[in-house]
Length: 229
Image 1: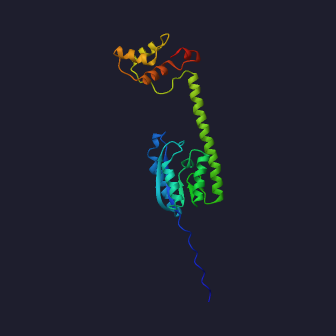
Image 2: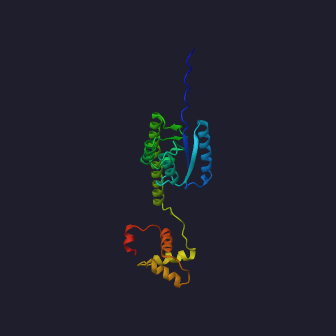
């Protein structure tokens, strides 16, 4: 009589927590949060994971404080979930150091994470290596984009392009304030505000007048700054 083969035990079902993030810098992405969660839920179902909870963040990718991400990590560290599932790499932090700190915290608790883009699964050593490489590349790309933006702004200023918000003063009031500021010696901002009020042009905050006039006249040179009060 043949001995019966022992039944193979099924691996325990992983408990997954889903995370989405929408950038505040892109209003067009307002509806992408629910779409991200729907896609991640489908992935969890296909892989046989049990979705325990889900969290969302609406903030810039450079923000360090991420309430949704922190709650998801805490849930795993407290033993309430086994796996963090995200859509893209930048959902895990603002830079490589930030990402690795959270990943190490998850791994120290025996947890793992899955990234949809790139199909990165850190349950394997290869997946962890893949993650580290991509995290470094993502940080490099973010720093490169920031440098391009700052360089473009500096180039625009050199060409005399006026940056920032437009003047918030009515055109006649702004013209009068600029005229007063160009007097020699230039009066103080407080004096200009009082003059505008005495001429019944309106009551304006000193900072509003100063900002509007400065943007209109452009940044003073070093020699001009010495003469301004």
